[in-house]
Image 1: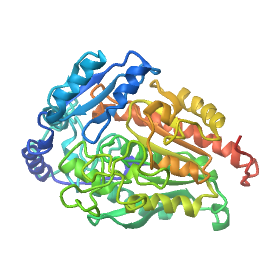
Image 2 (image 1 turned 90 degrees about the vertical axis):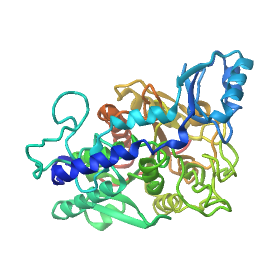
Image 3 (image 1 turned 120 degrees about the vertical axis):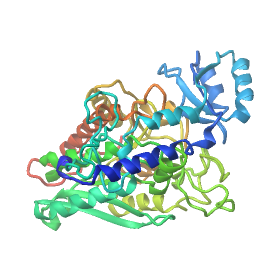
Image 4 (image 1 turned 180 degrees about the horizontal axis):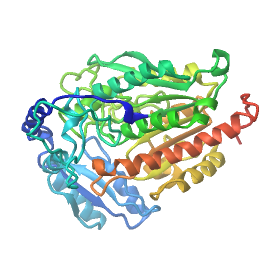
Length: 466
């Protein structure tokens, strides 16, 4: 479906914008000069607990270590705290293993390898079009004023305006098909961007549509999790290509939950974790709220901060942010029909289920685990499965916990496999990762059809909590 969307532009203009982009790269991410990333390999559960106890407003854990799962953690440390952190490692008897010596330098090199055309709002160009395998776009100077039409590529990282423009074009296209494809605007963000979600099903009667089970897929609630955006766009594409998912289910897909934060990771700080709101008393100096800590379930207790300058800042109150309000309203308006809620994140190759805020599983533990096992089996890369709080430590105010607390029976986080370097995943790996994500979601969606849609197509409610 995606291959049919074309965006032409001259190579001459593209080349000029390309050059401007590379002039700006060196200025971007300046704040990360001197930051280091450490590998943390724990040798016991006690080591893991002690490392996690060091979590504060300045340490940024890209991935938490896990003794049970044999997972090496990665933590970014500012230069002001590197000596202190290394002393803590020595005290714990852990080896100092510096994975990235300078985060600014690392990010500059990493972004040089990303498709430069993503910074062009009018044209999505070919990647590695010279077939050299180097991942670079080659300019054809023999035809500076002509450029063949090129498809929107979901195996690439795109800017927010491009994503919205693309989805609006699909909405227009499917008006002539037996598909309800709606780009639903919820509101306007602090920085005047449209906040929207996609509603997708077949064009059945209104009465039939309102009886369908709903699957919700949410992406980029943490704006630096770029990989979740193509994963969500691929869900749109796959649903359009699989008639049974259109016939039996309705889909609500949020490709970019946090638009302002997402754009900020493209233009200023690649590893930004918050929105860009300024509601706190330090909002001008320290803008933004961590949207996945802003939900009204055990708000501001675990892995959250009351400091506006923290990357874990939970907001002035629960649901202070429009991005969290949108998800709340989607859940409240459809809670009797939402049967599956998926939050896409980037934390190292896990499928997890509630709870995140307490060290216990929800009443649906058995059902979650059995379905989760089938989801993991469908994936080509190895994924681990478990309760969120036991895999990642406790976290309050998350979207998936809020969904489960509001009687959405099946709620999962899919934390995609990270690259060797952590949260910055090369574009060459996107295709494999988003295929895995779709395989898992398709298994879960199939199960929802079995549980809630009978052979006659009538909605059923056969699942009860244990």
